[in-house]
Length: 169
Image (cartoon, rainbow, N blue to C red; front, side, top):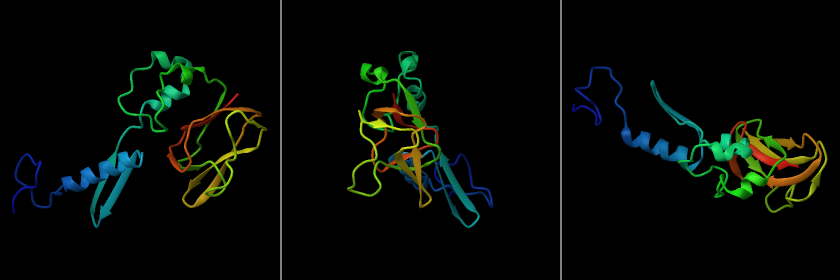
C-alpha cells in the first residue's frame, strides 16, 4: 500500500490515513456556513477542523476603538459593511449580544412583520429577535428601553456566542 498523500514518510501500521479531500471539504463547510468548528467520525477515525472567529467581533464590540484595531483580513461575518467606516463608528448605545450559538430570526415566522425596525422604540423585555438553537426558539429581549439604532444581523443568519445582534440607544 502506498503512503497517503501529504505524508512525510511511509505509513506506519495502524497509523491514521488522512483524507485531505475530506479535510478541504470540511474547511469549505466551515467558511460557507460561518462556523468555528466541525467534527466528523467514522468508526474510530475522527476529524475535527476548527478556526478562530473573525476579528470583526472585537472590532464591532468596541466601535469607538475601531480605528486602533488591526485591519481585517476576512470579510465581516454579519454583512458587507466596512467595520472601520465612519457610519459604523457613529452608532453608540447598548449592544445586545447573542447568548448562544444558533440562527437569528428577525420575525416570528417567514414573511411576517419583523419584531424590530431601526428607529422604532422598544421597552425593556420586548422581543428583539429569536435565536434558534437545536430546534428551540429562544427569544432575545431588550435589556432596557430605547430606540433601535442598528440591527447587525440578517434574518436567518447563523450567529456565534457573544456576537453583537442589535444596538439600542
